[in-house]
Length: 581
Image (cartoon, rainbow, N blue to C red; front, top):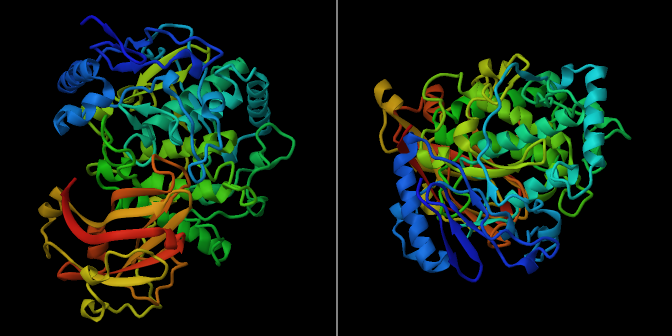
């Protein structure tokens, strides 16, 4: 192992060439605790990541010699491309949730306690002797509910400076998601990229183990909110009992007592009966798990590497239904839709962890659907790290590569039916079923850029090739791509996309072939407190072109339907691309 070297700069920089750089700020940032002068990692890279490791070592050496702000902008892209290291706790700073004003003093409320240990090791997975089984929330009995409430009661009773306490557990999401951490001179964001699934898997893993430890039951497992099944399409009853430790007052009061949810919720309840809402939900699940997610980067999100700008683009499930469910639960009476309606406060609601347990289950299920649906093998993804405390309040760094298989983490899910697998949207028999003439609407080049998506917009887009063979479709996915989608990230945003429709589209019924998918943003704040630009938002359309019998067309008609926040959205261009899966 290469030796470490220390450079005394404005604050100490300790670099271990087998791992990643760490940084410590002066002690006045955390007056209650002196920083460690050698706060470093002891993770070893595997052999498969040698190429990535060489890039990390080269970058670390350059950054160590020149200072992170002096050298980073001089490095070529290939030198910058590397896994994102775990954030250094002593660099935690102030998060922003409104107009750039520091509403949350993160250094005291969102950052975790500073470890006593100078060396923070990589986490070694415990031997698995039996699986913890995460139950579907609608199936649990009174004994489980009592145990679940007791676990949270004990967690909430811990001192607030204990990293296992409920406040500290909730703050993890705030610190990682609202701009509190910087890595490589840029803000760290675990949403809107391929980090979304692995970060939340590790987050729930340690949260679950802490709860189990507090009640002395190693078999205890978090329930998953089974929102992809009709029987689970409402807030689980156990979360709706006032006076219990898993109840939260700061939720949308209209969405209680078995109210059927909308997985594409956009701030107003859809005007439809319960059956139509369930049908819509199943159609959304089919689109997000199957139609729009044939390739790993479409499902997980776009690559996010050290030195690159955060939020390159989110995957299907993070987009919808994840963002929509957060909004559906959040309390509209609160200034920022707290708790679940904003990143910084989401972890304050115990239902958050149940929501994400099912998100985690989607990862497991997606890999069973066939085709090219498999985990990402990019070393920069596999070697990315996060920081957590375990059930013994010991600090560890964890890697993405160690969480790909939930069974190796010691848990599995109670089997439940997935009716959405067989819920492919069909052409409606009672509609006109007529192909829209692409020449009757303006081309995308005449419509975009648009500064505000404040009304329904219909246009045509040229395809790069028509009548593609089966082999060509297997090799490349045809993507409808929106370029440079910029929005006010403080606002919830959603717009829907349809093919072969016009301005008379029936937007509240998405259980039909013409519905392609949706874009949704959950309020948060980033480097720029008001605006964020997503370089690309893509929807897969191979299947839809076949179902709509449009494979032989040079042009396709696209309709955008703003549901909420459209006046805060601008789009530079729309095009169709052929992209290797």
